[in-house]
Image 1 (cartoon, rainbow, N blue to C red):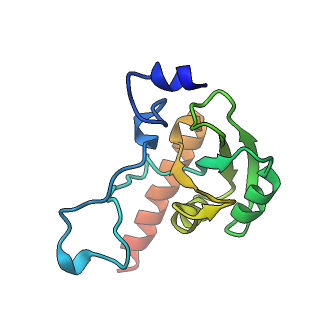
Image 2 (image 1 turned 30 degrees about the vertical axis):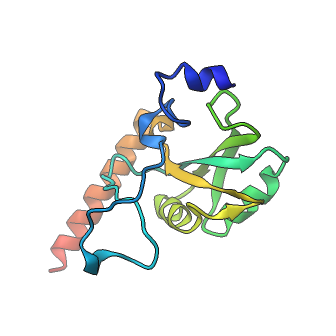
Length: 154
């Protein structure tokens, strides 16, 4: 497993897809924009958001059931599975969870990213590369419908 991480061009863990790497804290935010705890800043477009969430940093203790129960608090889960071939830190696992609705995935990502889970900090990120072309098309059509509805009410 360590060879897969090193073979990814010297990138950090999560180097299989560069957008899955955890970012450092943004130091250039205006004082009035800072929250209670420092955060990294990343802008998500409609195409970067997804119903698929990649969860990194899960301890390799056989806690998949507990992980799924934790994420199910935020919405209906269609499917979930471990990603054995995805590069991970030693003694940790990576899981992929697909939610029924994108709003559930947004909420779960916001609430569970950088949370402690069995002694490790979880890193939760969107995984749009697991979407099919049809799922991406539907996601963009839903967004167009939402924008049309929101602008027609004004």
